[in-house]
Amino acid sequence: MSGQLKLSDWKIFEVLAEKGSFRKASEVLVLDSANIKRSLDKLESALKLKLFARSPRGLRLTEDGIAYQFKIKELMAPLEVELAEPKRRVVSVQYDARLSFSRLLLLLSRYKQIDSGLVFNCSGDDANAEDFLSIRLQPGKGLQGFRRSAVISPRLLSGKSKPITFRQLSDFPYVALSRDLDSEPLNRPKPTLIVNGADEAIRSALLGLGFCFVFSDYTVLQLVTAGSLLLLPIELPEDDWNLEIHSSSNELTHFFTHHRNLLLT
Image (tube, rainbow, N blue to C red; front, side):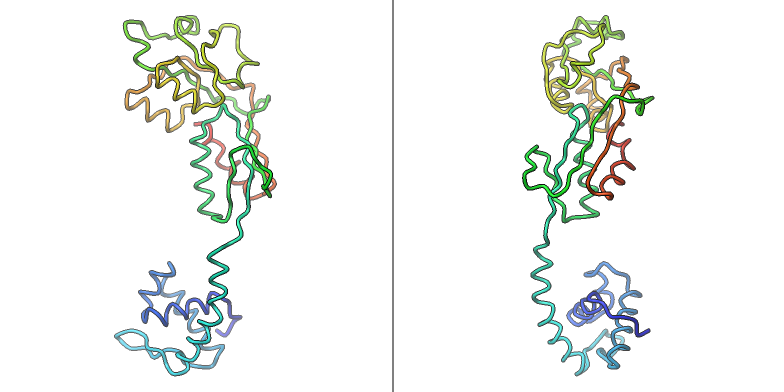
């Protein structure tokens, strides 16, 4: 039971002394009562002292407990100042504009729950970055089965038939992604508007500026369900592309590789 004491054991004692019950301490520390009791038993065993008197009404500090409470407050104060201002690591994010930035933000927010000390810099200015995360579409054969679908505003279809082929799409303005221009198939219409990213293309389609090709992610499907966009039965295969994920952090590489499909569908 004696075991090696940790800083967390003293923190648990400090909260117990302040709250006076296992239940209230459990709520503050987000630990179950059994773990808190084990920590207290270990602490009292190591010190060979009783720090609390137990009763049906809760916990009451003994004289030894009161003495240690003052000692711990003095010891923990400078540590808590340091913990309140943790060092933050800057990660430069290079992200392919053909992918939805909204999906990237979703995964970044999930990763922040794992490591809240990271600052993700998506601005392109990486002078102060200590780590990097690169998510790119590169020529390859890794995306077999993935498609980008054509979406269009209903206002553009007013009085017109819904296009179902590339040829019929030529009757409508086309919002193209700049990264796509080098690989445009011959049967695709010439763009009337060129934007940098998928989210900009979606906003342009919402404004009725033209149709665009995007991965049908959650944001797009919400807009389709709401009737703000129409999903056309015309798809752009991505069989000649591969999603490459690289990072200076093994944890980031593993996380984004594991969730790569969320960036596409």
